[in-house]
Length: 277
Ligand SMILES: NC(=O)c1ccc[n+]([C@@H]2O[C@H](COP(=O)([O-])OP(=O)(O)OC[C@H]3O[C@@H](n4cnc5c(N)ncnc54)[C@H](O)[C@@H]3O)[C@@H](O)[C@H]2O)c1
Image 1: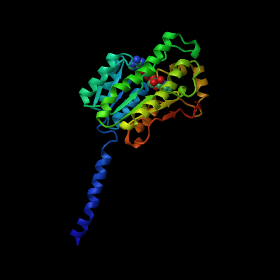
Image 2: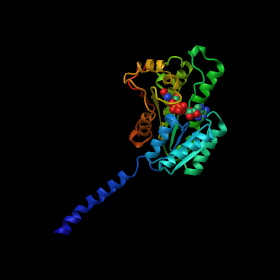
Image 3: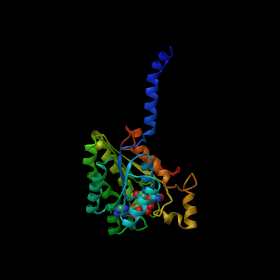
Image 4: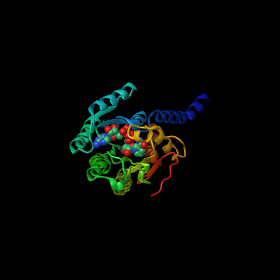
């Protein structure tokens, strides 16, 4: 009788232990993720979150010292599969090295988070000098497209992948004095849609996030001065700026299998700031 009950229970036991081992496996286990400009701010928060979710993570940015510091910080937190590489996304040699070193170390690429951006000068779009315009579009848009080209064969080899472009709420509605930068982010939203359309048959998904105002070094002009800070807060229905980690969960979702049928979409995380396009 007892043996009967046990043998009847065993399929459940097997199922239960399988479920437990599945639960123990993290949602990005076995995935390899490259995040550009990821030694601080939003990029670093994304790198940390993807590592927490089990991914092997490649941290990169322009300065070697910053890369070393960021890798150490993650390793001190207990993450072992971290690779740090110096990469100025506007330089072809650096982009190629980023991809080659990643594949040499981790054997492939599943995830790209294109996060690097610059805004060398404040001002209205029509006040933007040509060299500044070129720099903004080289880093914020052209490099994002060129890195996407480079990861493509590796994602195809894995029969799938996920790309996330870090755009901005300014891509929907231009932010005062960030004219050319805002246009570059609108362009990135378009790039995301075009890439998604082209790569859907390859099971490679592309989505974009559009952060509102996040407290980082990049946004210092918006929170470094008390008067400007108060003005900015008045434009945010939630009444506060975001912390970098508040962008990371959205990216983690978008690159995971939980988002397996989502591609070509732009997601706003802006504390209720209005978006119009
Ligand atoms: N902070 C915000 O309020 C905010 C809002 C919307 C969108 N964003 C976007 O989020 C992303 C990250 O910005 P952040 O706020 O974390 O700022 P951040 O200053 O912390 O990070 C930007 C990083 O980009 C790096 N970078 C610049 N040019 C590069 C290049 N050519 N190659 C490699 N790295 C380069 C910088 O060194 C820096 O580490 C950017 O795309 C930015 O446009 C930020």
